[in-house]
Amino acid sequence: MKKQLKIKPVADPSTEEKIKNAARIIFHKKGYAATRTRDIADEAGINLALLNYYFRSKEKLFDIIVLESLHSFRHNIEGVFNDEKTSLEHKIETLVNNYIDLLINQPDIPLFILSELRNDPQALVSKMNPKGALMNSYFIKQFQQAVKEGKIAPIPPLHFIMNLIGMIVFPFAGRPIISIVGGLKQDDFNALMEQRKKLIPKWLKAISQVK
Image (cartoon, rainbow, N blue to C red; front, top):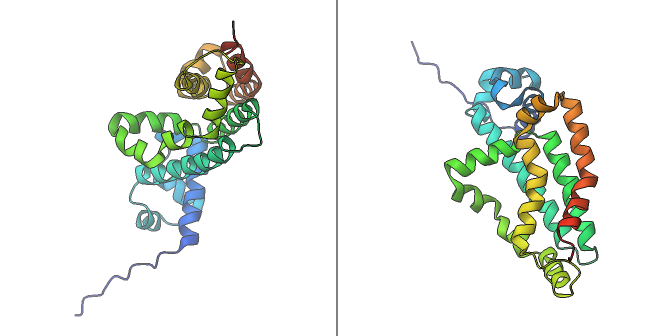
């Protein structure tokens, strides 16, 4: 009796994209921990074996999705930060709006980043190159010029960036505690983050005012 050869399916980019789109939906609905690969396969309308052929594990799929989102966001922010026609204030408002929108749609990103930083910080930094995106941008040149002209307090740019990112990201990283303390449901939390789009630029302006 001849041994029957198993023929592997040919990789189809459209199927791969369908799986990733389904995974985004399920991760967003259930969060990373509660999501099963079977849930993703059902959402994509495929069998579990096919999902495992394209992506070896839930962890691998999640990593790919988050890194794609971060790369897309980084590219968008580079365009904002290096636009020589917009003001410093406009750049800050745009970053706050775009970053909060990203985290509302993908709230697991902060915990993913914290986990990656704990496991292998150099690998994540090399993939994202945040220094190139932020510290070498036209935004930093504008900031330094504003300090030189006495328009804002002489705060080191890195302190300003830490305040900016911290005000955006921390509520999402601490969402479980914040939601319990505030008695917030998901929609309530998202509404709170929408309010921060207007508040954060005001707080940053107050912090950086010349005394």
